[in-house]
Length: 455
Image (cartoon, rainbow, N blue to C red; front, top):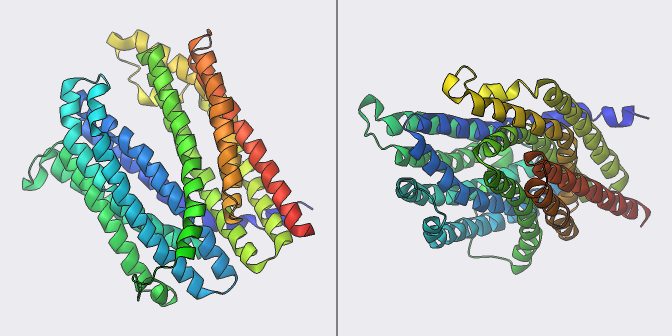
């Protein structure tokens, strides 16, 4: 009985590992950016954090929107319809380009808000030119996402990973040369970091296009576009799938951003502890996200074949694999919850011993809660991927809103600010929201697949 699910593990892992590695690459390069900029001073590091807080929300919306391309391509590929797959890419490129430019324009319009956020004047002055360039880098990033989602829709997850690795190498190299003025290059500080981000994201687009164009299997898909012939029906299909997907990602990113804000109300030590737990949780979340992409691809393929019994079996095999992976991460968090925070802090710093001790104690409490929400977070993102593969996005969007903002956030707000639980109360709210999301999304998937089998 169990073997019918476990026999799919090998292929599911092969499909998801390149996605996971690509996403971890983005996380590691952000870490490298922070370490390099941190060498310049705390004001520069704060400026990068402030600028990225605007870009991150916009980026999550753009990436969420682009995920609509994958199930359409996977369904077309499963049904052997190359024309539909190419059409999904062409129309996806048009929409992603327009969205990238729109998000850039919105960030420019919202820039004056920075002056109302009571940030130190020197931080704001540094953040402004940095934000301009990083905001513009959203355009090539979201265009890249169109190619990435297309490639993943054809079950080719390794090519976007190659592009991400190349981009990371370019980004770190340019950071080294331009932030510090190494090897005769001008010393540009955090503007140099922004240039590195922009150039590396442009490189991602060019590299993946040349890579796919050079492969016989993909050449016809990515060349010979007739952009003058745009079909309203295909546009509406991508928008109807993409906009709810973008909202789903926005709702989740926003509640974690709210957790950062609530922690800040409790003080700098609570905020530092929150950042440590959040950073560790975001690393493990990449594994769930990668398995979610595998679920979206494989469910989309079976939908194209109209083999709904296989669709359900394959999806449940990915859910089981996710559960096993997340239980391992939960055990790791429980085991290392007192040690992990010490990686982020200088425990031998006598001057800040009291603060560091408090942060380690608070972070250990948060990691105890995070251990349990590993399972909820992993399951909800994978089931969400399976539902996107079914092209069911409207009801899941409502579910994520209710789970995070009707259930999770009020608990975080009340227990975090009005009880002695403090930071732990904020994370209990996150755990409750993620658990509610996982349960309701699974019930939705269970209902839909049983209905498809019996109809």
